[in-house]
Length: 468
Ligand code: ADQ
Image (cartoon, rainbow, N blue to C red; front, side):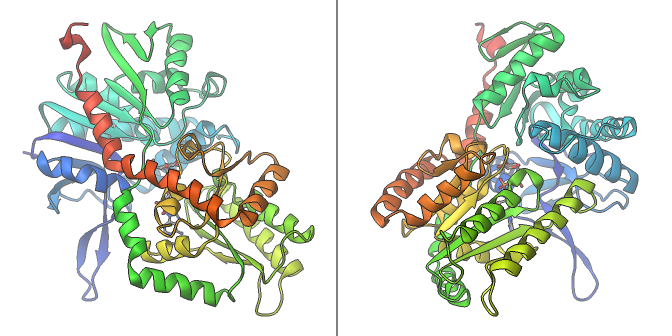
C-alpha cells in the first residue's frame, strides 16, 4: 500500500533526474528548481509526496524517498509523450494560452491522450492522499486533474496553479474541448494565476461558457465555491543574491567581460529557445541599432544563451532555424575577425555560470511576446548586488506588473524595443542604481517562499465552513 500523505504536489515533471554513474549504476539526483525549493519545507514537514513523470518512456519506477520528499513516479509511453506532452500540451495549449503567437494545432488523438494521462495522474493522487489532505496540482499539462480527482476523492482540498497566462475568452473559445478543460479546472477549490487579469479571464469564461454565477473572484459551481486569484511566482531571492556575491562568481563575471574583449556594453539574453520569448525581435533590434550606427561592434556585444527546448515540436525546430539565421546574418554583416557582434550559445549553463553572466551584463533583455511571469528578469535583479545594470522588460511579461522600474517596452513595436535598449545603454549610474534598488527591495520581500505560503494559506481558508 502506498504511503499516505497529508500534502501532495502533482506536477508533470518530478524534481529529480535519473543519472547513470561512472560504474554504470542508475541513481536519482534532485534537480533543483524554484518550485521544489519553495515547496520543500512544506513537503518535508508533512511527509509530503510529489507525483510526476520521471523523464523517459520506460516502465513505471517504484516510489522512493529523496531528501525528505516521497517521490511517486508516473510513467508515460513514447506515444503518450508525443501526443499528451509534445502535442496537446506544447503544440495546442501552450501557443493558445500565449496569445496564439504561433498557430495552435488541434488534434483529436492528442486530446484523447491528454485525458488518459490526466486520469493517470489523478488516480495516483487519489491513492497517495490521506483523508482530507491538501493536493496542489501544477500547470497547463494537468488541467483536467482537479475535477477527476474531486470525483474520486471529494474529501480532499484541491488547489491548482497555472504558471502560464490564461487567455481572454475569444481565444480560449477556439479550443475544441474547451468546456471539459474549464470543468477540469473548476474541480479545484482555489485556482491560482500569475496575474489578476488572468484570474478575471477565468471567472468571466466560467460565466460565458457554462453560465456560472460569480461574485468578485468566487464562482458558484454545483453548490461549491471555487475561488480564483493572482499569486505572482518569484525566485529564492536570498539564495540568488548569495550566489552572485560569491567571490568565484564575481571573478568569473570579470573573466567573461575580459573574454568578450572588454566591451563598453554587454547585452544579455537568457531563455529557453521558445517562440514566446521574443528572441528574434531582440536580435533584430540589436542589428538595426548596429546598422543605424547607434551601437558599434567592439563597444557593444550581445550574448544570447538559448536552452534547447521541446526539440521534437515543429514550431521549435523552425524557430531555431530562424534564430540561427539571424545570428549568422548579424555576425556576417557586422562582425570582424575575432570580434563577433553576437555570441550565441544553444546550451544550458550551470546556475553559477548564469549568475556570473547576469553579474557581467550591463543590459539584460527580457522581451517575451507573452509570458506568465519570467523568472530570468527577477534573477537578473537579484544578481546585481552592485546595483549596476539595466533591465529591458516586455510589458507582456507577468514580471512587468511588479518590476515597474525596468526599461519597459512593447515587444510588438520594433522602434519601442530599440528605444528602450538605447535608453538602457545610455542611462547614468545614479539612475540605474535608483531603479535597481526599488526592484531589489521588492524581490527581497516577494520571494518564492512567500508565493507558496500565500497560495496555501488561501487554499486552507474554507469559506463554506467559515459560514459566510
Ligand atoms: P519558463 O517559460 O521556463 O517558465 P522562466 O520563468 O524564465 O521561463 O524560467 C526559466 C528558468 O530557466 C529560469 O530559472 C532560468 O534561470 C533558467 N534558464 C533559462 N535559460 C537557461 C540556460 N541557458 N541555462 C540554464 N538555465 C536557464 C514557466 C513560465 C514562466 C514562469 C515560470 C514559473 O513560462 O512565465 O515564470 O514557468 O512559473
